[in-house]
Image 1 (cartoon, rainbow, N blue to C red):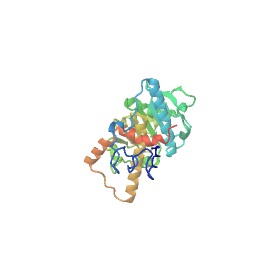
Image 2 (image 1 turned 90 degrees about the vertical axis):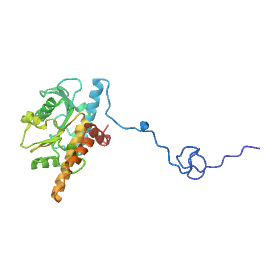
Image 3 (image 1 turned 30 degrees about the vertical axis):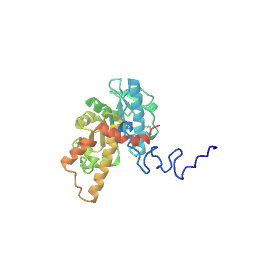
Image 4 (image 1 turned 45 degrees about the vertical axis):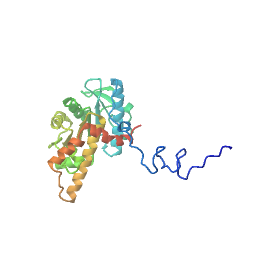
Length: 281
């Protein structure tokens, strides 16, 4: 007999699937059966990259620094020429990459960044550095060898909290990341007090500066930037809660547990990735 044409697939079925099988199901599986679980080792999960040499690490840090600066510009953390993020160079001792003086944060790319030594001298770049502001970052980098990146900007809620002379209260899960891991410098300290600021930060991830706002550090640009954003948001929640009534803090045991879960630099790096995806080149 001559070959008979194959019957047309049922409406809604995938080409090549068995008649009556559920769309997307494996051949031979029971009708309506859910897809088999994907093995965990096949699920992608972003982690901080490891670079083979200093050149690769430098390019990565500069790219992330420029992206964080653009993000801060979009978030409204730019206040005139105030606001800096710095990252340690992976090769040159006591040298730090920073945004140039007087340039809009939202327009910066890696090629716009300056390499500046601990004495404030520009080693690479074509623009001036804000020497007074840079002195604070340089002092923190020197006092904290583990701090790859340092962030300080004049965002509104952090400045309001600093004006009250308050620490971040454990009012939310996100705020608990800072529980007993940040400090208050209860007294105005200008750029000329850079050593005092570094000492007040101590071993913590964040500092509330009376009259100036927030400063954060991390083992990557992503972590330090996330800690600043998270602290600024926690300050906002704290101020809103206070204006509405009497906030009830999380108890100490739960706050410590939340800090252990969400308060690491790796957790901060992971939390920052959706924000990075919105500003990457």
